[in-house]
Image (cartoon, rainbow, N blue to C red; front, side):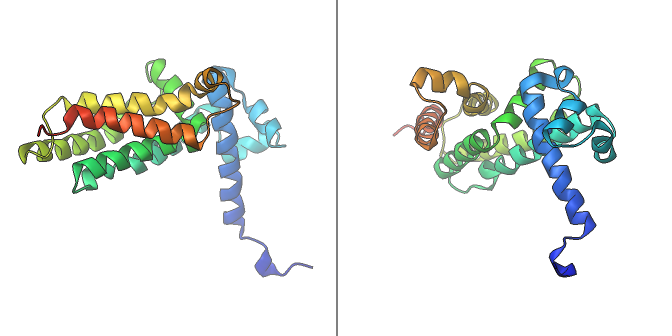
Length: 211
């Protein structure tokens, strides 16, 4: 008979259940979108009734927003690499690696976020503006600081960062297309390593100081 110490507290069990719901919701929102996904479908995949799922998340819209919050939090966790870096080349390499890691580890999350943005961000525009813009501006300021000291060449640093986002997120959003064209069932670690090297060379080539 298990000891009471072997049984996680109720709060821990609830957190585990909420995480399971978020992961399944992320997968279904990525595949079907907000309109196509249903609480019944998400609950069925987890062996839960719709009523039981509503105990954790009172509406589909709230669950969708919570998924986006979780994805954005994960994404922003890797966006501080540039602002924290003392060396521009190493900082840029770490930033690209972090962005590709997000695409490799949570492709469904990227697809949910992309669907929301393509639709015009009707549910998440305020969060993007208030949470992403300050981090973007901090990264731009890092480039500006390096440019003033001659460590990088001047460019439109905002659009450089946008291009890095587009290239790295493509390895989540278009992963199936890429794998089909590469003749393999899915992208693997070698593909992400190759992408990281190419994207870094392109990005660093745009700002590397002239000899």
